[in-house]
Length: 66
Image (cartoon, rainbow, N blue to C red; front, side, top):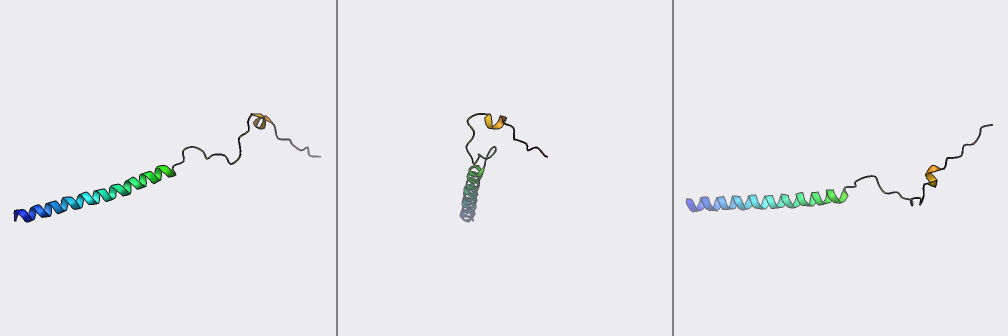
């Protein structure tokens, strides 16, 4: 009986190790995907930035109502 219990224990340890490795791979892949998809800060502008502050300092013209 001692040899059978040893085989069962070895099989259980091997099964636990393989399950752990399987979940570790999924966890690692999920973490890598989350890091790749993470966007820190605001998104980049779709147009080129102005080279000076003139565009920001100019007031918009208001049309006078007659």
